[in-house]
Amino acid sequence: MLNRRKFLKAAISTLAFTAIPQLSFSQSNPDVVVIGGGSSGLSAAAELMKKGKSVVCVEAMSRKGGRCFTDTSIFGVPYDLGGHWLHNFNFNQIAKYGKKQKDTFDIYKDPDKVLIYDGPKKITGMKVYSMYKKLGKLKRGSKNDVPLVEKVKPKWLENEWFATAHQLRFACSSGKDISDYTAADSFYNWESYGEGDQGGDGFVKQGYGALLAHYRQNVPVQLKTIVSEVKWDNKGVKVITNKGTISAKACVITISTSAFNSGKIKFTPALPLEKYEAYDSVPCGTYNHITLQLKDDFYNEFKIKPDVYFTSKINSKGLETPRGYCSTMRLHNSNISYFDVGGQFAKDLEKAGSKAGIDFVLQDLRNIFGSNFDKFFIKGHMTSWGKNPYTLGSWASATPGKAKLRKNIKTSVGNRLFFAGEATAKNYGTVHGADRSGLRVAKEVLKLI
Ligand SMILES: Cc1cc2nc3c(=O)[nH]c(=O)nc-3n(C[C@H](O)[C@H](O)[C@H](O)COP(=O)(O)OP(=O)(O)OC[C@H]3O[C@@H](n4cnc5c(N)ncnc54)[C@H](O)[C@@H]3O)c2cc1C
Image 1: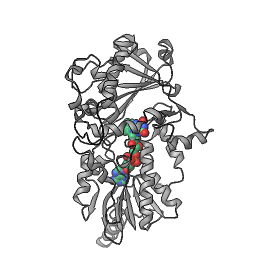
Image 2 (image 1 turned 60 degrees about the horizontal axis):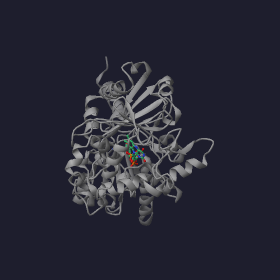
Image 3 (image 1 turned 90 degrees about the horizontal axis):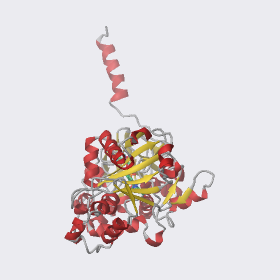
Image 4 (image 1 turned 120 degrees about the vertical axis):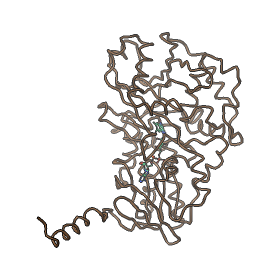
C-alpha cells in the first residue's frame, strides 16, 4: 500500500508525464510557425527556409501531404487519396520538377480518351458532349456571382444527358451541384484545370502525393501536432498544440476553409470579422474517390485502355443531385479504377458509409458489363474527405453571391498572421495552386520579419 508521502510523490511524477505537455519541437523559438503540412504549408516552409528563416511546420495528421497523399497499402499499387491530376500540365511547376527526376517518376500527358455507355450500350457520346459544351459556355466570371443554375435553359432539364453533363461539369469539378455553385467561381475553375492552351492534365504513375513528398523532401514536419489556439499581438505569436507551445515572430495558416470554419483553432484575440466572413463564404465542397481493384481479365475482355475516362449515363431527373460518377479506368496501367462522386450525392454517400459507395458503383457496373461482373471484383475503397476532421471537405468553392469575399482570406492580420492554402490561389482547388500560394505567403512574411 502507498503511504501518503509516496502517494504524493507518485502523483507528482505522473503529472510530470501527463498534465504538462512535453515540448518536442526541433526548434522551440523559430522565426515562423507554419500550420499545415499540405502542399501550401510545405511550399511556404521551403521558401522561408531557403531564405534563411527558421521554421517549424506542424501537421495534425500522421503524414505529410494533406489532401495530396499517395497510399500504397490499400491496393499494393500507388493510389492517390486526394489530388491525382497534374492540372495546367504545360505550366505545372510540380510536374516540371517530376519530369527532371526521370529515374524516379514517370510523368505523362493524359491520353484524353473517353468511353461512354448508355446502360449496357457503348455509344459515341456526341449527345453528352453537346450538353457538356452548352453548360461550359454559360456566362461566367466575377461579375456573375449568381447560382449557375439561373443560366440553365428550362428545356435543357428535359435533355436525357443533362444529369451526366451536370455531374461532369459541376458536381465533379467543384464538389458542388449546379444549384449551389456560383458562375463567378466557375470561370476560374476552368482556368485552374488548364483547359485550352494550358496543356490540360497530366499523370504521374507513382502518384501525385509521392511526387509532392519528393518535391518537398527537405521540409521537416512535426506530425501528429494539433494546433488548438493561436495567440498573437504586435510582438509575435504563441501557437498552442497538443505537444506544447511554440513562440515565433509570425504564423502561416494553411488549413482548409472548412477546417478553419469548424473553429477548432481559436485565435486570441479574435481575428477581424471580415476574416471569418471570408472563410465562411468559401466552404469546401464534397468530392470523393470510390476506387475498385479489378482483375486484369476485366480490362482485357472489355478492351479498356489505361487512363481512359469512362462515363455511364446518369438517370437523375432535372436538377436533382446527379447520382452517378465520373471514372478514370485502369489508372497508370494498374488494376485500379476511380469512380469519383461529387456534390450532394457524394455527401449522401459519405454519410451512408463506404460500403454503400462501393455497392452503388458495383450495381452500375453490373448493369453495364453483366450480372456476373462481381467475378472481376477484388477490392474497393472510398475516401471520406468530409469526415476527416482536419479537412472537412475536398476543396473550397464559393457560396453564390459571396465569391468576392474569397480575396479576403489571404490578407494578413497584424503583420503576424499570414494565410495561404488552395482557397487563396489563383488556380484554386489544385495542388500546384496551393504550392504557389505557399510561395506567395512566404514572400509576404519575408517583407516583415
Ligand atoms: C478527392 C480529391 C481529389 C482531388 N483531385 C485533385 C486533382 O486531381 N488535382 C489537383 O491539382 N487537386 C486536386 N484536389 C485538390 C488538392 O488536393 C488540394 O487543393 C490541395 O492538396 C490542398 O493543399 P493545401 O495545402 O491548401 O491544404 P491541405 O492539403 O489540406 O493542407 C492543410 C493541412 O493542415 C492540416 N491541419 C488542419 N487543421 C490542423 C490543426 N488544427 N493543426 C495542425 N494541422 C492542421 C491538415 O491536416 C492538412 O494536412 C483534390 C482534392 C481531393 C480531396
